[in-house]
Image 1: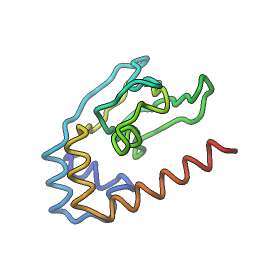
Image 2: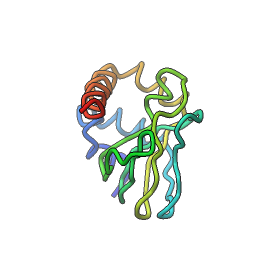
Image 3: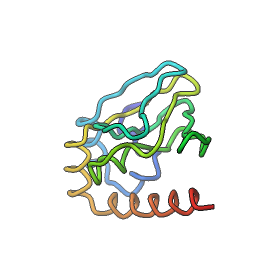
Image 4: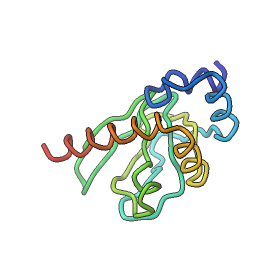
Length: 133
């Protein structure tokens, strides 16, 4: 499956045109992480936004298992939005295939596509509600 088609399956990007998806596909890069790889570490800076295409990842917040991420899920946006440290540890549970954007690519794309910004806000609110319960 082509990168743009993979990205079209991600709810965050579902409202984008074929042209915008093609542009996004060009500015991202694909990376495969082996099971057990730590992709983000709590309280460390971050420079990437990750969209999971295949596999699963475990999220831990303050040492407690918070969530399992799967294809279509994404992570890394919070540290890129506020330029603060990562808020969670994300570890590949299985081999993990991701599309990755650098912080610069992420910011530019979100600014140019307000529908993506709105979807990000909804996701952030959902995560806050999940972690409070």
